[in-house]
Amino acid sequence: MTEIYFTNVDGANDVLAENHFALLVGMTLYQQVPVEKAFSGPAVLEDRLGESLDARSIAVMDPQKLEDVFREKPALHRFPANMAKRTQAVANYIVDEYDGDPTALWDGIDSGTELLDRIRKMPGFGDYKARVYAAVLAQQFGIKPDGWEKSLPNWPNISEVSSETDRTDMKERKKAWKASQA
Image (cartoon, rainbow, N blue to C red; front, side, top):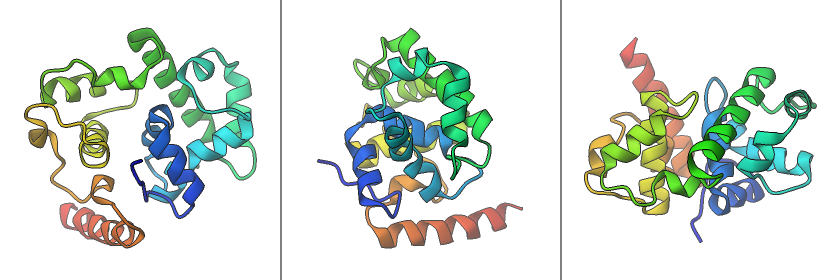
């Protein structure tokens, strides 16, 4: 099994390693909050819903109920209403385009460019987030279609994290990188 170290909670890391839709939810939440908060969100969401995260069930869930779950204390994100909508939009996209199976994003593709194009089509996945997600798939799960290296981000990112120490180091390097870009 793949070991993930994106949070400081083993159970949350296990959810990310075992459930590709949960990882996709974590990627969706990964903006304007610390990495640990974003990627622990899927496990918290599973606990609150009482079931394993699944694109089909999130897609058909009453939007207000999902927002309420995101708003429960502590909120899943600093912008719970927006992130509930975005999570449901990603779920709907995966259901509509890939019959609810997030692994179909990379099944049968010929190149890293095609993977990146597929990821960018998801709601809320611009170039930055798409490249980070493609890098996570490559570095953490071995999903490396031809030319995958061309899509790797050229900034510190979570795909490099393979231990607790790596996560801390990545956060420090990313902070310094952002400061150098200003």
